[in-house]
Image 1 (cartoon, rainbow, N blue to C red):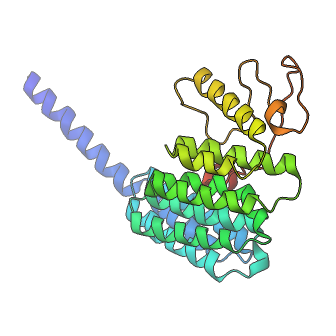
Image 2 (cartoon, rainbow, N blue to C red):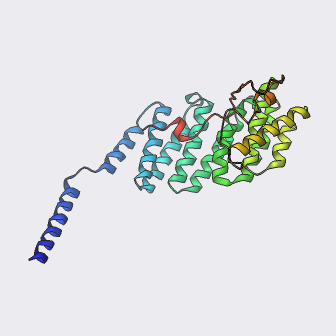
Length: 271
């Protein structure tokens, strides 16, 4: 009797599952239709935004092959758009997002190709000192995909771009931002070389002491990526960024533009 009831329950479950599979909604097909409609959007930025989000959803549902197809269409959107359809940050973020999502979709070749386009787009930003605000956003994806040496190479080059920044306090902020990331890439001499583009040895020494304290406080060198300010123990930011030396208890924090986010989440993601 018990065996018969068990078989009956299994049969009912199987029958119910088959019925749901036949008569229920197909969310993957609906999402595919969303992608088709996205491809008809006239405005390139709006089209790209939806294509990237659809690819992200496809990957999260385990449909990596579909995600890769959608990314191909997103790439076409970015490649064929008029130059004025995207500003510098939007275009760079588009390529970085494509690289990120390609990694998520398990297509490293596509990711590397998109990253190459991001590097090329960065080189096209003029004047060259304007590239500095986007360097860290590109560098993070470069480090994720190709490792520390490739990221360090970009950061050292960025140090040369920063030399063209006319205002000394802003120029120093750039040196600090790039040298900090060079330390994270384990390129200590590269970091020193960037700092030495400033001729004031006293400023360089203060900067290194502040970064040393910051690294110690945040836990054995695990610095928060892309932070826009320094707050080391008893070493206010202004002591190394500005021309004037301020009291140790001033509590002054100085923000920097050298860390604009270019990742998918901060630019194109929609929940």
